[in-house]
Amino acid sequence: MPRPPLDGLIDDLYYLEGAPPYARLTLLPAPSALLIVNLGAPFRIRTGTETAEYADGCVVTMPTHAWEFGYPHRTRSVGVHFKPWGLAPFLPMPAAELCDRPVTVEQVWGRRAITDLRDRLATADGPHEMLTLLEDELRRRLGETAGLALVRQTSSVLAATSGAVAIGDLSVAAGVSNTHLAQRFKQLIGVTPKRLARTYRLTATVFAIDPAGPIDWGDLASRAGYFDQAHFGHEFREFTGLTPTRYLEVRRRFLHEHPGHVLASWPLPAD
Image (tube, rainbow, N blue to C red):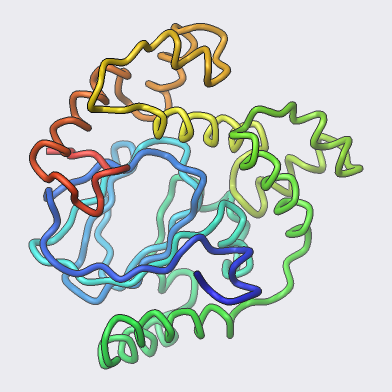
């Protein structure tokens, strides 16, 4: 866990090295933004019908649909999982401009800055020092961001309730209009409060699925607050591109082929 004030923006920093479990992984949309500084061979990201290669790393604001990550045979990187609003202080543009459009780190911080950071990371004495260097870089770049306190406060309510709160109630509690709140969310997260609430709810529902046992989809949908099982199925397909039963098949495949793997709780095999 990073030290304050980064702890209010970041869920975790990580180091990743080795052979991926699959050459291509599907990442489901989650209430999180991502920064990767790549230290190995380039990787690929596919969003919708577009595929791009990333050599220095990538910046991903909170996605609204599943996206595909193509690993090289061996991978090495450091990264940051941001809270939905946490990436905003480090972006030179509104988050909405990057929604479902991953960019290179160079496009955000400039070539000179990312080249210098990658050089320092590559010569660091082990993962701990690398993550300390990355945290220090973020701390150095941290600045004031208009509207961040509002977005952080209201988003935290959505997180605590897994999205089960009326957006109008959030606006009233914050003392702003629905329009103003939506504008701030689009600027700092890239999506509206309603979309973030839906993402929190779906994420909580997915994590509630136990792949090892039988699943009553109707009961699961009801406990998650969906109107009915059909509503849940439609929402699930919109976000993930899969039916709930197909998701379960692919999740079980991962757990069977790579039991106990560090990535087995969220990404899915795409090949």
